[in-house]
Amino acid sequence: MKRKKMTCEIARNICIVQALAKSGHFPKRESEKEAWFLSPFRSETQASFKVDKTLNRWYDHGMGIGGNIIDLVCQLYSCTVKEALEILNKKKLSFSFHQQPYLNKKKNLISIGEVKDISHPALIQYLQGRNIPLQIAQQYCKEAWYTLKGKTYFSIGLKNQSGGWELRNKYFKNSSSPKDISLIQNRDKLENKSNRLIITEGMFDLLSICTHDSKHRLENNTNILVLNSTAFIGKAIEIMKSYDHIELYLDHDDTGIRVSQQLLERSKNCTNKSYLYKNHKDINEWFMSKKQISI
Image 1 (cartoon, helix red, strand yellow):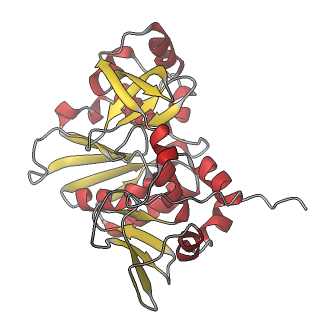
Image 2 (cartoon, rainbow, N blue to C red):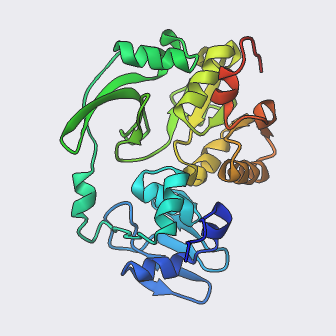
C-alpha cells in the first residue's frame, strides 16, 4: 500500500510525547497537561525541555526556543522542513539526547577550518547568480572552509551568536553546531533602543535587504535578526522587546506565515512586510526577479 504523503498539517498532529517515547526517551516528570524532558540540545541534570500536551508544542527553557514537531526535527537534524517531513514520514525518529550515545551524529559533525574574506571565484559567481554584490556579502559574511565526513568544502558563511555557522554554496545548504540566531546590530547593548529591527529567516534574506535598500544598513540605526531556524521564535520575542519598530520578512510557506502571525501577536510594533513578495517563496527569490526595487 502506498504511503500517504506527509504534509506540514499532518506532521503537526503527530504527538511529540509519543514520538519521543517510540525513540526510547521518557519524561522526567509529567502531569496531565505537560511533560518535562532533559534537553536534547545540551547536557543537563535538571529537565528544562517542556512539552505542552494540550498544544502539542515543545519549549526548551534553557535555550529559549520551541515549536512543533517539525521545528524539533529541523533543530535536531539541522535539516530543512522538507527533509524533516521525509524523516517523519519514514518514521526514522532517533532523537539523540546529549545524555545518550550518538555516534552516528558525531560522524556527521561539521568542523570549521579556515575563515577568511570571500574571494573564491565559485562563491563570487554564486553570489552574482543571486544578485548579491560581493561588497555587501563581505560586509556580513565570510568564506568558510569546513570538513564533513572526511571531505573538505567551502561556503558563504554567516556566523551566529553561539559561534556556529550557516553555510551556503551552489550545491549545499548546511550549518555547523551550535545552531543559533545571528544578530547584526548597530549598538553593543540592546538596552539602548535602536529605532528599527528587521527579522528575516536566512542569510540571503539578509543580503537581499542590505543590497537594495540603504535604509536598512547598520549605520542608519537598523539592526537585523536572522533566525536561521524558526525554532528560535522564543529568542526573537525577547529581542523584539528592545525595539520600537519591527519589520518581518519571513518566508511564504506554512511555517513562515505561522511564525509571522505569532510575532505580530506578541508586539504592536511589528509590521509584516511579506506582502511585498507575495507571489514568491521569499524575499531573495523576489529580489532576483526584479531589476529595480525598493521597500
